[in-house]
Image (tube, rainbow, N blue to C red; front, side, top):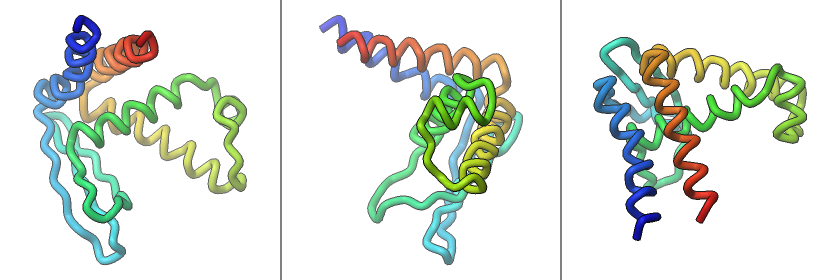
Amino acid sequence: MLWRFLAKLMTDFIEEAIYEAQIVLTTEPMASGELRCQLKSNTAQLVRELRIRDGAIISASALLYHLLLNIQAFRMCDDFEDWLDEFDIDLPQDKAEKKYKQMQTDEHDTELLLGADLCNRTLAALEISQAINNAR
């Protein structure tokens, strides 16, 4: 019972960040079949074009969670070469560089969206949540 309470408590951090930053999600279908998603806060906006499965529902919390996971992975590595080694990336050089640069952009844009302090607090809550889930 305590584990369920802690898990619920630690998943609320995404919703709390969305509330605190006053984030709103808007989506727009594109001719390519992708979905243009815009997260807008009281300080910035972030636009990403995503391919999603038919019938999948995108939410602000799911998109923010994805961005935070990318930031977490990005910050674990010292540089591009470390990132390639750490995550055993097996892509052609140009595609790997493009993916790495997108992670840099995600980090920058998410920090603008949330503000540096809220972004760091939310990343800390993510780490705590992951530790709780790993302890189960």
